[in-house]
Length: 96
Image (cartoon, rainbow, N blue to C red; front, side):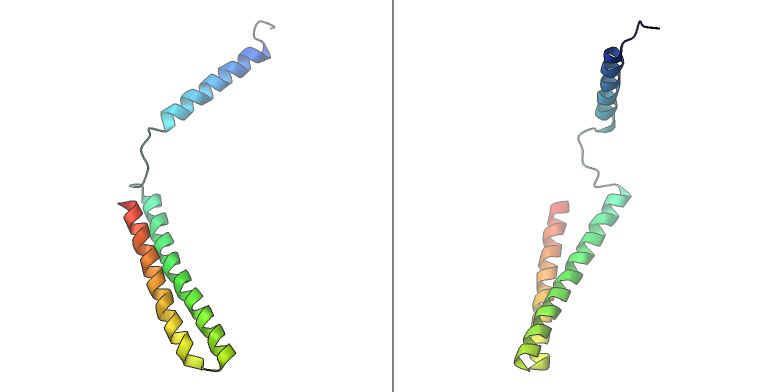
């Protein structure tokens, strides 16, 4: 009953954990996985929507401040869209 000490059991457990970690990871990224591709697609959509939302917020704020309702709103929505597309393109370049 006292043949196996806690230190021996702990070393055995650490050895098994290390071997399981090495077997699970082969060094290659999992970008071809379906869930990873879906994650990247959602990331790109969110980047575009956030760019539009920030442009809308800045434009609406400036129009409210200066009293020129559609002018800055339209300008900053287009700038937000351009920034979102630029960020999406950068993300697409990371995938390749």
